[in-house]
Image (tube, rainbow over the protein chains, first blue to last red):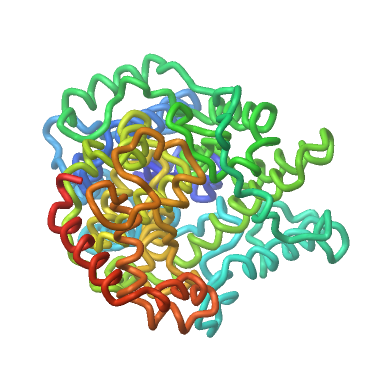
Length: 178
Length: 346
């Protein structure tokens, strides 16, 4: 019985991913999906495809070294749907986790796709904030407030000031509060 | 930061960070760290050649970091060898120097092989310990802490409608040579050519060469955005979409920029060696040797004269248009029309 299935996307190859913080190899499993649809969504440069696939495979190799269970779907694996959504649905169906855990994605479309797949399964979906970035989505929305025009220069000054205040408190990893 | 004031007393060193290489050229630039494909990458390269071989670009020069270990080496190499000169030359372009003095850490950051905190800390530490140029270190840190975080914030604030933005109503198809580099415009040839080789071009090549041309030629913002997402190894959607639609194409009407980024072929001449040997002359607006970038630039100003005149950031740009004779304007407009009609052959 799998407790958490943790989907790791191609642009989430850091081991500081907070979705992995409470990973328990005894009851959790990683899921990584290569798919034609990701390479074809726009007519991708061959080097871009190679970078993402190689980065993902190196990550999976490291998971293997750590003896973390990982379901890894290669782009040319036979007997699987060819597109990302189909492959995710297939994984949810065959693994039947108690929850799907994913860190915030790098594309709006990808988040909708994951939500749809989780609703279809159905499976509990838990999003985890992306702490790679210093400023959270909510933090930025708060900073933007009702401003009609957003200007990087002002954001940057506020960010520098907030970072300095954070540094004094020794809070290096949490999202900065602007 | 030092107390309430930034170190050096200045928030922004942009004015010092806009040099071209000049007639003498860039001199000796230490090359960035590149990584020979290991076994895993070799297998992936073979797979991509077989399965996606019809896709644009080549794998012959693939040397990007694919692990955190390699990414850390690349970062340290940049800090040690290239950061000190990054600031001054970050906007400069040269045909034989596809990477300039740039860091090439964006792909590693955007795949999360590197954490922005450690990247910023490494640059700041080098400033304090080794006295690197403040303008360089500040110029680099503002890209990571400022622009990158800001752009991601804007993406999630404005999606999904941001992706559909088309302020100028531009609908023209991307000319085929955006995918091949087969054009007589030397600047586009160089920028697209190195993009196909490496999946990389630096910010000014993306903004002021391919981006500027796209907005001046009236290309569909959605097609242009898909092109950038396809072409660059670091192009994750959250960073590519706002940079293309908002910054390069002004397609969201200035939601986070104070003006469209357009500047004619003369700017490219000042910042690069591309124009040397090009069949088009950057200072010529009409006639057979006219630079398409320059023709389309003036046509763009003529068409948007009123808009530009009303914005203090762009009023100066159209002052010259106000003094132009009607005949001059008509000639530019006719040349621009012909350029757009024959876009696939420029």
